[in-house]
Length: 340
Ligand SMILES: NC(=O)c1ccc[n+]([C@@H]2O[C@H](COP(=O)([O-])OP(=O)(O)OC[C@H]3O[C@@H](n4cnc5c(N)ncnc54)[C@H](OP(=O)(O)O)[C@@H]3O)[C@@H](O)[C@H]2O)c1
Image 1 (tube, rainbow, N blue to C red):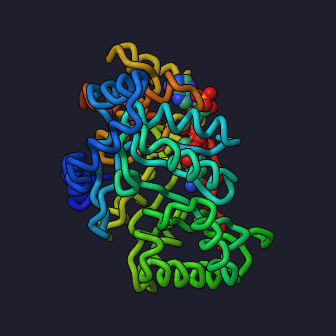
Image 2: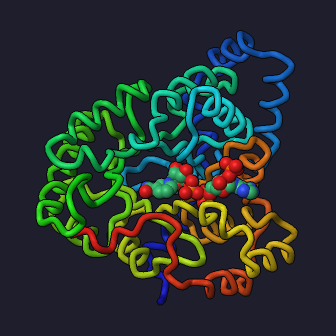
């Protein structure tokens, strides 16, 4: 299927934003901040972050006007303050400025705390990082306000940059329960209110199918900024991407590595070998080269760094086509297609 003009626009809007953020801190306060925290180790990590072709300088522009980094750290299964702190430290050192959490990951509090502890080390302020979290399926409907306020309180970072309805269904209800559409609408209206109050800077959805997206776009007051769904060469989601582009919704990928399983696919290995890149970089580059933001998860500092080094090489049209030809609608994560 032909890629739409809006989608090309999203790719074109990939923008440099680091200079904007730097301007937000006065030179003086930045120097004071740096002097207070500088140690040989921080000096080293800071220069590494500055030297690398880091992901903090590459963004997509959302329909709110906000800039969202093309590469964010996925945090599903990152658990406990120590593991989260280590991963966030490695990510900030490697240039990540976006972090994807969710109420159901049970790590919002650990993520918020790690960021508050680590931002000074990298001379960053709240505005320099982009935090996503998600309303859990148990809070869909009349519990949405409580759920969103709980995320805000757990993260404790003042506001959330992007808050998503995690799943089109409601926990405890069968997938085809006729109350699902009403619950989704109620959750969306709650997110719209919190967005108007400035607590959720952008709002969006996750795991919505084409039908769920059409229903939302027809009824919403605030158009969703992002749709976050599973996306990799075995699940290209062409029609969903086309609809997102048509309505100015940023299409964002999760499970780009097939939760690790795609890293041993023979076709991926062959393209990676040809590019002299790791299989993970090859899969992530395939997405970002189409303007699709990615959220690779790793708990390993070397892999976290590796997964961000995506902007000093490109795949040929032939490599892109070879990977896209793997499309077989295979999912490694949950399938929302039956949700009423
Ligand atoms: N909205 C949703 O419903 C939804 C669903 C799923 C995921 N997500 C988001 O998307 C993020 C990413 O998706 P995901 O966690 O499902 O899986 P993923 O990023 O596709 O894969 C993560 C797995 O790959 C391994 N890995 C990462 N980088 C590697 C590398 N360079 N070399 C070798 N192995 C590597 C990780 O192991 P190590 O940790 O040991 O490195 C982990 O086992 C999540 O963390 C979450 O933030 C959202």
